[in-house]
Length: 307
Image (cartoon, rainbow, N blue to C red; front, top):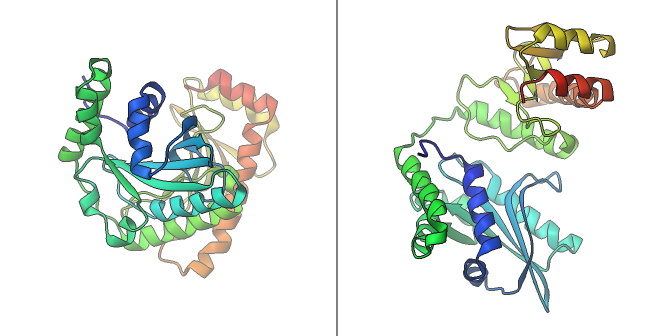
């Protein structure tokens, strides 16, 4: 029934348990040493340039608000997310969003032992999938949640470890630092493990259209808006009158691209040489993003794109 479980699915499981089970919420808060009524639970929170929180739970009692910042991992490699969770937690205290926080890792049991000490020290609480499975097993109403988490655990056991190329990972981390600080509106996601063949930076979907995205092909042809469509020619004809002078349409059988050529770079280049090129590309991507939000262009995307 569940050949592959994505992290977004297990995000929803924990959000639903927090909403639907006072007992589960009480247990989760107990691990954090707090109590209170739930104020809100949110997924994929991007409130600052400090990256994304998978699931944010905030409870409130007579003392104030307390946050549980949950990083959900089935098997994806670790980058620097946990350190950024701590930064976001402290930023929340400074801004008055909450008075305390805990960083929670929600993952299969087998994931945590493979974390380095550098990553573990940023995790306040480990909530294993297996313990949530045991909780759900005693409650028939949660049978589907139990089955989904069991499939996720099995997928983790069958999973493989993708081998990172350290020079590529260093490049992506430095790229992410610039993008998250200087162009947070592009919402670049923290880089997962990257191998030697990784030469594209793919940004999150635009405007709620899950298959329409920005791409930086940094060793090749520059920055693009990627629009999957069954009518490539129709889309191109619709947006052509609105292109900026340096924008070019590229067509494949199933995808239309709006391209802006930017200087190519390489992950082996000295980063002081690559950084200005990356900033140029990010500025071009932001301009393409704004182009996609023009009413005429947005309507064309909505009409022609396979969403």
